[in-house]
Image (cartoon, rainbow, N blue to C red; front, side):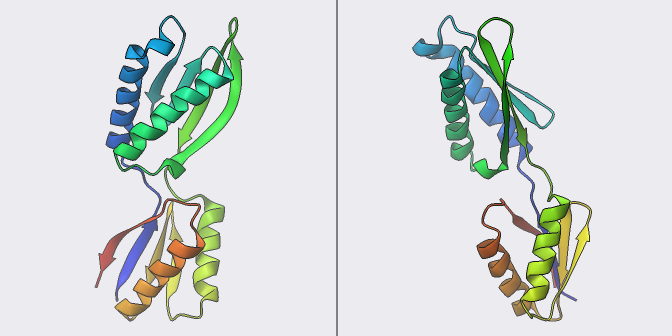
Length: 161
């Protein structure tokens, strides 16, 4: 029976490369000389440092540009709150989304069931597996999910006939 998995997984190698390139650019830019502007990646969390909110926004813009050049969707980024650290310096944690959250998985499953197509959707961990007797139905489900869940950077893996 044909099936595929709906997943939300960034290419972490490309994310790491983008963060390293952003750090290199921050180190060489004239307007960041002598400031605490920096960026670092630990596990699946990017931390941005700066002297003020404006500088955080500039560093984040550099990061977004580097991610876009490496074909990593910026919708994977979940910005946290800006925190004050010693003196007049600030930092912000940006989480890199990995996996479909439970409530998003339920939304996708409900969307597929309400579509009246002859397919089954099952949540399996942080992915949603869709099975159907016909390949055309699966392709219709892919188009539907892409259209309705535009706020999530979804991809489709393990397409089997």
